[in-house]
Image (cartoon, rainbow, N blue to C red; front, side, top):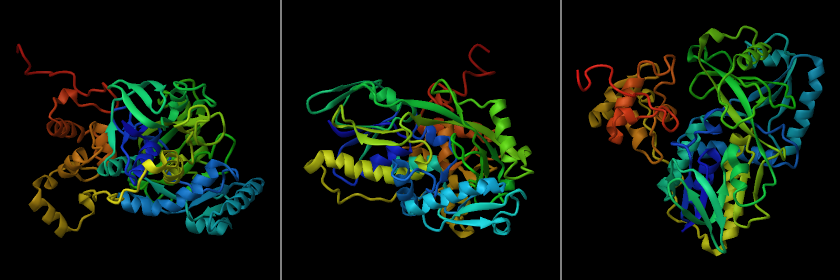
Length: 483
């Protein structure tokens, strides 16, 4: 029997698993998809918010400010890209200025450091390409950018390095509470655990309904994005927001940690929890709104569009608590923006305060816990001397698979064989970026299929692009049997 079963392996679930491994506990992560970080974590703005806009006293406010302060150390330990580049909230006329002042005062009350309202001349110093109509801005120096799926994958890897288990392609279909344990019926067999952590994102209300009459609902809200080529990486230097509305923080323009520019999102409530398609109307809205920030945005440099779904809770706030109806069942639900920014703090709170608090003496500190992951092999960033040394030890680092991003075969093989390693084409892409450049895998994709098949010892026709049954190959076009 497990001490804790975590349902969901996004950035919240994997972060909680990692923090629980600081204790001598038996922990399992259950994920219905074929990879970690395959839900909201893989499709969002990738922003670490400073934390000035959530209402005072809310979970959002608390965990955002605490989480922001933790990012530097967490990302150093987990070898994750993180850049603290600051953010601007632009006012395009004097009518917007009261909104900036409200955000400033709220941020000060919440303890966000370094906030100030700056005027047009200072805006131009920071962001020369911003629209000439911007008259003032809220400057937040502690905001940053991160690789969201990279963080979740590294959380999962570090949790597993320290003894946690991960079970993919495992959908929870029923949960029964017995006297001193939970029995989870899953697509890969029953799992017994003393505690259950519900970190299942968009489906958190559905999971909770298996054991109780849910006190909340989760509604899907779609956001659509443009991703621009890294050739225009100098377009903005910081995260640039517009004044927020009741639907969210609005359309932003921001660098990514990998040198691209991300533009979006819109905010559209949708009916089902799998509507991740992009729409002509949604993308047109993003284009039009983004031009308020930068008048001549180079949308002709778009390399891909994508959309993600946010888990909108009926409560209006993060739900981070043990159920009052079912003791030992912990809901971590409705984690929309600033959920990524809050993830490190939520993980620590759920592990140390809630789970350890419930388990009591059964949760002893783990003296062997190692908070650091093995360094990732990023060939392009090495000196020529170190590249030569690495190639002498492992010749596969001399073979460039992705020319757009200069990714070697050695990096792909390493990404497959680490704990929580890649099992799909997009899983490889999220871990070491082949296919993330201008051609979007047009040239390197077939080679990635070959490497996955070889390393996983499966047929190329079994290799999947992303989700379950998303096979790339269905048969031979010539040279097959009978010819």
